[in-house]
Length: 404
Image 1: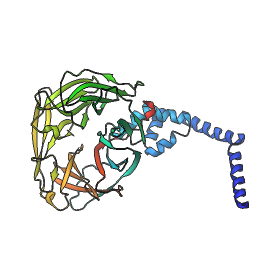
Image 2: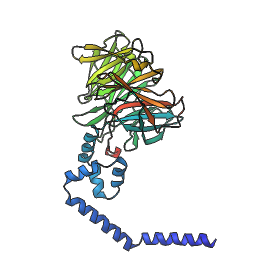
Image 3: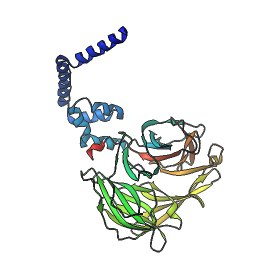
Image 4: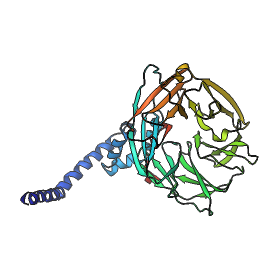
């Protein structure tokens, strides 16, 4: 009892000392000196120095003083950091287990060529938050993602880099309607926008847009002069244009194009039937659709795969390109089935296999005709029935949600 009373007295004395006017004056003096030092350094140099810090250090520096927070929350720093991050893109992984979703990332290798061994890549854990059932998770769009919680009937925007998220406002909809949402980015105005469609039975009846970052978190009705049905659940945003698959009035497959800046619609006729279920990818800055023989995945028995590349959206012109896989593709190292992820800036197709541990990512360099399998480490503890996915070309964005 005496020992416990002594400890309590010591803690009380520490609180009294830390809260004393003399201590507060010394702390204030140190903060003033730090702020004065910051004011003596050119702002461009300050931004350059801070941009070299890891994300966790930037988060701590925001708490040093109001002066530091003002710099690190400002648009000049966040835009400069984003510009540098575009040159060091990452792989972003998500794993849904039970009632939560976790995000991890790793450095995206450049020019991977290692046929004799199986290199490894370690991941960093970003965030885990509760989700009753994440029905759809959008592709990473300039660092942000849009997630649908089917049980709670809510949509959440999250930034894994800052570990922040917020729920989108509810939409006014009709009874028994279904909502589909896509996330896009306008690189000119540097704005994220959410495109939403309200479906009744098989057709889209309403189109609405919400702009992030303009201080007005409300949905706006927009016009769409292109009737379409059965919009796909996935999309891709390339150079300010959001693409998703759908079917037209004649039941033909089509690619719907939504210009994020002008909020205008257009469409492209599909290159072939069945494209409604294909994977859309960014191939050297152009929209492309993948297809492997008669399926939309690759297996260890596959000898080749094809992609359709959109050469001219206005003329609805596509070109087909066939890639023959090297002989080592059929080796035991290749899992039975792998799915398309995308294409890197260094001409490598990326495939993923998450059917069981360990998890692998495959790089096929079609210029050098080589295959490399990379084992992903740091995501242990996941069972075969957990839902795991991967996004290519993810960028770190330090923009805080409160700025929206």
